[in-house]
Amino acid sequence: MTMTVESDIQFLIQMAQKDLQMKENKRILETAPLTIRKLEKEVSDMDERYTEAEAELEKLKKEEIRLDGDVKDDRAAIVTKKNELLIVKDNKEYAAKTSEIQFLENKIEGHENRGLEILTLLEAEKKEVAAATEKINTEKDTKLAAKKDWEDKIEEAKATLARLEKERAGTLPLLSERIRKRYERILKVKGDSGVANLIGAVCQGCFSRVPPQQVHEVRRNDTILTCEACGRILIYFPADQEPKS
Image 1 (cartoon, rainbow, N blue to C red):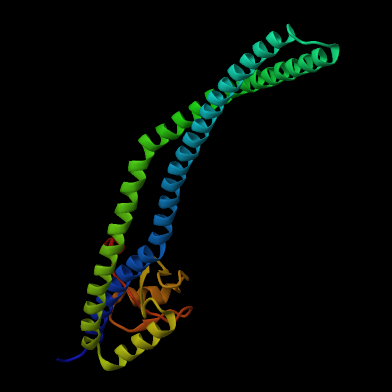
Image 2 (image 1 turned 120 degrees about the vertical axis):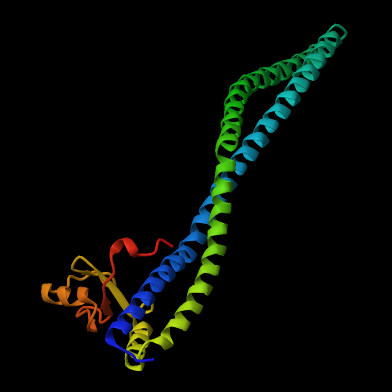
């Protein structure tokens, strides 16, 4: 097969298109895990908020029941103490019983005050549980679906990358030896591609502006030129022909 500059450039265009696709799929592989972790944390936070609110609500209910029981016990104890007052034999014993009754009455007052606080807290916690439930019902499935979508994108990107790497490896030998070596040398340095498309007057490899005369020459696709800023081989194909994925 006779190698010409024009054929090299056509193969370089293919390489550029594959490199663009590979760059996009690598970007997905780099960014998707962070997005997935963020979605997982948001779902975990929802569940944790609900669990904590439910636990606090249950804790308050148990305290309310305990306080009710303590108040009943203390009232019963007061009745007993008052009955005992009727049979005391001296002032010292009377004072002791009276003091015990006062202590129990103070306890009851403290329990009742705490009971009022609990009623307020219960209402607030019920609202918290309702809000957490509403958030789970309206957002959790959406976030889980988004997570699954990103996981699918990762698998698709891996498969696409494997295919593109194979295709690029198959295209490389089609270049003339001189251009292939130049491409491979630039690729080793730049990491993403050894060739860059020219859109308008801008190199898409480094986004530097290319001189007008060089733009004209590159757009003809009949000579090998490189970007003065980044060193990538410049080629031209219409922007609407750039691969989407």
